[in-house]
Length: 269
Image 1 (cartoon, rainbow, N blue to C red):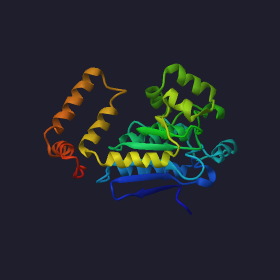
Image 2: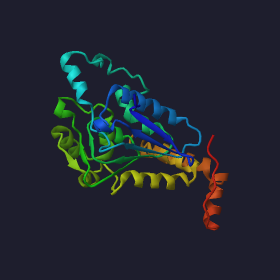
Image 3: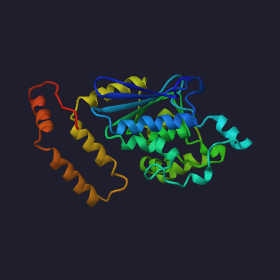
Image 4: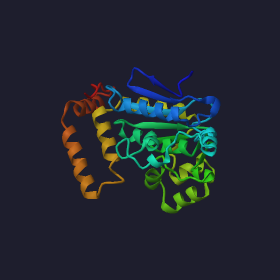
């Protein structure tokens, strides 16, 4: 049986996480959730990691929850225990939220490549990434209302961070399908790319050539944007800069620019 998610490791410190149910447009199953969380959490502590690309195999990024899960809810065979959803099993998240929040805990940039469709939970998984590259034709929807549900895979905090309140209400209340161009205009996606997977890999390669120490500090600071006060954020950026400036990696970055060559960085411990 094929694994629902593949992890591809590259020698330059880049990891590709690939949703791998192409025959089902990478629809979400319990096994996909468990595997995606396991892979994501393994990357949090992976030595030498510099960037992550998150993409889907086949015709789509992710079509959302597999319809078979809804059929199980109807006939009473679902393994989801709704009474346990409020339990915090993964830090501040439950398991279903962790499949999206795990990307923020990976200490390096995570770039999602969206094509085909990104519906419901599939969109929420992508919202956890740092950057979302998308084709103009990709269909996107906060689709939970169609099934009588609310966005519950970290969609609420991520949407609050990315779009205006009235825009979020429009998308959540209606479940309407939008295309990649509008997704970029509204703030759900970062930019249009004809080949998001190739563009994501090119971006990852570029990121991997920059200071890992500064890159990880940038991600720590950016993760504070939606929760820290200006006062706290000013202090944290000063702390990060103090830990970097004048040290070996920062000196190498300066020398490489002056000498017009690619820098050579050691991986962080």
